[in-house]
Image 1 (cartoon, rainbow, N blue to C red):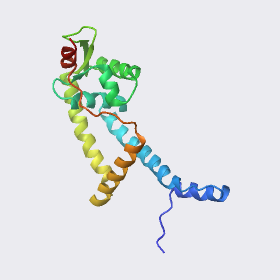
Image 2: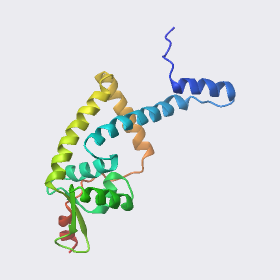
Image 3: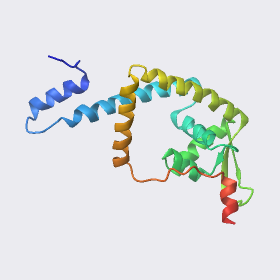
Length: 184
C-alpha cells in the first residue's frame, strides 16, 4: 500500500468527509494545497524583498520598470496593467519608491498631461541586485522537484490559469514618451 504523507489539507479533508459525507471534498486536495503552497512561497519571497528594504508591491513596481527596457519608464497606468493592481495602489507604491530615491516622476516630454515613472540609477542598481537574489531564491524553492515534474507542473498550471484568467494582451508596453509621440 502506497500511503501518502498526511498534511493539513488531508486532515481537513478527512474531517469534512466525516462531518459532511454528502459532499465531494476532493477539490480540496488540489485547491487547498495550492493555497497552502502559495502562502508558503509568498512568505519566502517577501522575506527576501525585506532584505533589500522592499515590500512585495515595491519589488513588483521596480521589476516592472526594469523589465520594460531602456529607458526603464512607464506611465502609472501601464504599471497598474502590468502589476494587476489599481492606479491608487500604484500611486502609493510610487510615492514610497520616490521618497526612497528609487524612482522619479515627471511629465512626458511629448504630452505634459501624461505622467511618467522612471527608475533612478539607485533604483536600477537595487532591483538588479534584488532580482538576481529573487531568481536564486526561486531556484532554491523548486529544488525538491525533479525537472520532469517541474515541467509537468508548469504545463498544468499554465493551462489552468489560461482557463481561469480573463483574456489579456501580454504586449510589451512601449516607453511612455514613445506612446505620447504616437498619440500626437
